[in-house]
View 1 (cartoon, rainbow, N blue to C red):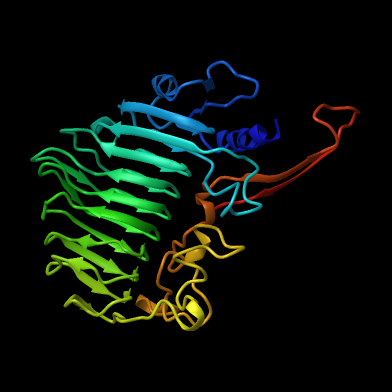
View 2 (spheres, rainbow, N blue to C red; view 1 turned 45 degrees about the horizontal axis):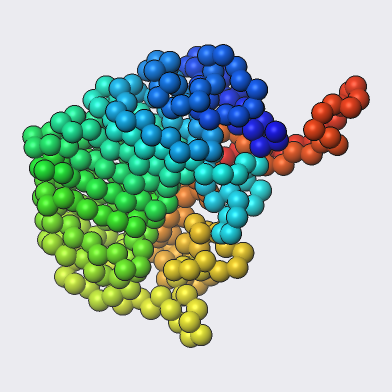
Length: 344
């Protein structure tokens, strides 16, 4: 019962700040009619534009969604090996898969453990915000259609697919995220930028002549091709310069030094004892990425004004400790102690 109390408290706090409604999906505690739904589709159908769907552990597939909604999870790496302690007292993963049509433009996703979201075929879906998620993103559509102004930030394991059969993704922006895959679908008409991102080891990057801006990013390898229209500024590379356009970049950086010790991060490409999967991308003391960004900020996901948040905790209060003498009240008054944290 303890683990399910936590987001209920958060829901109450959110309700006090907004007139939009909150619907819980997959909550297994005491059910409230008109609030709790067993399936994500039923919650979607009950919601109005601007409402919030709050997800609990489970696998949810929604098909095509038609409304501008907020999709809220509880973060990731919260239990088991490679997890972050004292962040949220809840366990189990949440997987969410859906497609957006044009009327769902402006939707927001935050704190989802395993998110797969895409624009639906022949739909112009704009102004989508994805924060603090483990995310596979398909900003793709059919010839002649455009998805504009997708904003992805503070995410882990991002696979970004920007085009399908001639569709375009324009003015997209990805900030402070870990990139594991990048696919522009053979289209050279995309426009966007990556800021303070880390591109994982072994990732090949084919920019297909697109006009992409890369700033304050870290690349394990310089395996970058078809880049003449892209600009790289204040980035760090593990390989030699392949002829990139830009300035203030560092090349041939040895990520592994004496004793096989990483010279840039605290633990990557593999986590070290005491570091979480996402914490391994913290800069270690003396890292060449410290202060090497535009205006003297740090490179990578923990630099700049929008630093990565461990475990993708959504920006709502969360209880991370709850102590009670028994599951049921045994006295009056009955004392419980809990610890709460802000995740802004």
